[in-house]
Image (cartoon, rainbow, N blue to C red; front, side, top):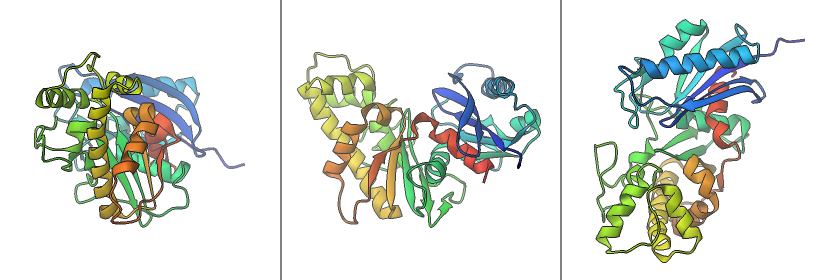
Length: 309
């Protein structure tokens, strides 16, 4: 009987770190989640937390010393030459990832942008199986995408292709993006982190008075579900921007399938899909659009696929 293969999968996000032991069938055998550190003398606090969590899940599942490798899915942008991340949504200039984990576990270690990893997860374990051209979009703390073109993960010159969260989707409000490098970016309007900030800007510009809390993205969607007219009007603006971005993705990559994940999408999937379908341009045929069924495990599964080919 062939020896079963396992991967140690790491998903480093701006909000949470998730670490798991996963087998070749994509079954998660042991798992831990913890908040991503935002304070510390150096980015080593992030690395140390990942290693501590990894050791616990390996011991929990008795797979210490039995893993084929470590697959890392990380928020970006990434610096593949240095083997780490220059995260836009964390207060550290650089987080080394490949070398510390390689030294800790003495196995091959692979790094992917989290959205690229998620696309790989969808392609290998989700509805993307058997397809050659798919796009995965994450609507979460930030916004990004992973792209499979002609059966290959699209990396780009520096490994940061498809940073679609920083494409321009608006020239009316010219709202600054949290990246600090431009205005009108998709992430600056529609991400979980920035939507409440844009709402405040929109509310003042449009002279709207509200009778609900808009402190978080969750509050805004909740008010819309209660048919609050101001919340509904604002979400219509968000729907148009999401659709503008999807329209751009269609003409850039011509995919067979687009799946959407991330915390904003998982909690508000039907509303987001309806808005995108309402306003997306039909210059090219619009392919099937789905909220991913792999949920928050998708990046972990992609990191696994990168190790267990």
